[in-house]
Image (cartoon, rainbow, N blue to C red):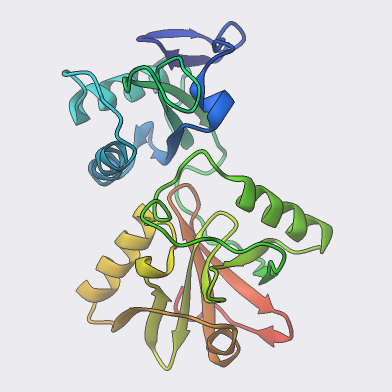
Length: 267
């Protein structure tokens, strides 16, 4: 039996329901946060909570007065305990505007739904086979103040993932409306050239990933130069290495972009 946390209680996932007028379902009015679990505990909770509160403000949601890092941590750990996840796992929290109404909500109260599942690895494991990637050309990501947040409007990423599947790729690379490379289907992008680390700037519209931030900070602590900048396809072809990062998988190295081949030296 697996449990989820919803409406302030732990319930059997097979009995969990959402109302037909739930705004996450009707309007994608909300956002989500994914976390990695190691030894039965969610990692980087403070970093995730900082992004959660930032997104809440950006989407003009209104959390309950008692909503806090401690409260959310206890709810997550309670769910991990009930689902008997004492090693590796993954947590996803879906936040939504708990209100009726059409495009204009009648209120802005915050609701959320926590899921947790066990995974085989109890630590971040670097992939043994490199990922194959290419650019998704059909749609571009518009750049605006919400571009950096993980909102529930994920249609672009779904279409890019379908494109990768149909082309026999592991990931699609996504461009903004100025044709800059900004991210992949599910991860932030890094390249290495001459020992220097480069990653798309947030101003170009990439998701402000928690693992992205941790990698940047770790590189700086080790006196590795890091530049947040605009990347184009020519930069990828000139790079010595490419890797992808996200909170659930950590680092994944890329072996091929079109005819370009990379090796996992930095990652």
